[in-house]
Length: 356
Ligand SMILES: [Fe+2]
Ligand SMILES: [Fe+2]
Image 1 (tube, rainbow, N blue to C red):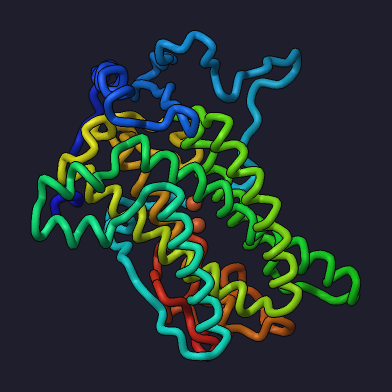
Image 2: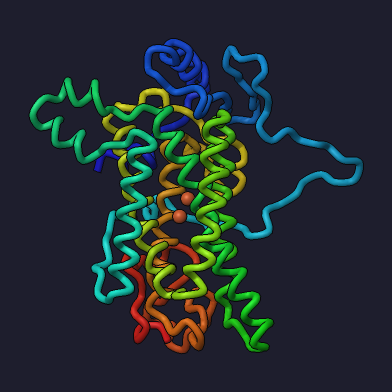
């Protein structure tokens, strides 16, 4: 309940960036932020007087420098984001779809393996931390506490791989539609839009960080393996891949829920009043007074919950025949049905007989 009031009630402070910078400069060496992974370097105030504040590293530049042209004033996003309300975002919960078929079990096992690997690579040991915290809170805090830098490493890496499955699936369905000379029934757009949305998550985090060479290498390597693995997997069993992404998104919702809870518990002081970057305010149309890092994480978590629902739903459908329920019109408008927004949440996906 604590974060309900915080999201809807907290007003942004113009002092936040200054506090954040001081805290970061003071903590950067003792907290072991692994600068080769990432350097947090840019943020802004809520009002019009945006400013860029860099760390002491004078080589740090604007991550996406603007290139003014003679004739263009602004380039808008091709896929406008649906508007989320405070109440809708607060209604997002951690959920798990039970693995019922062999395909489900394969998908769930693959996600468990990946999760372990990523936890190891990014120093994220939530379960161990909770267990030790029960016996010795001080020792748990010293040994396992996640700070802003560690979370940011995790978020950048996660989002850099999250944008791949939708693009692979959309691309393969696009090629199949042309190859077999038949309609796709609306799946491609939703899949590509999901990739676009994940890339916006990444670009938003990159406005607040500067990945080091090691992180770039990890992303490059992961993308090379990840794209090809998904390409092969989607050719073999698209249903399993959608279920796999559904399970992956369950984990994403858990990760962002923990970050929000950590902010609320005062464990991430540098994020408490940190402001969302301009790219995020534009994309999510974040209202005035609701543009903190915490608000941003609420938006991103809601997106992940939508991907969770969409992919679990797509995993329930006939991959060859069924239209995409998220872009279809329904005969009976009195019954809840899938939408692009958060109107009718169904965390474990819609069953086929409910939507087709
Ligand atoms: Fe994401
Ligand atoms: Fe996602």
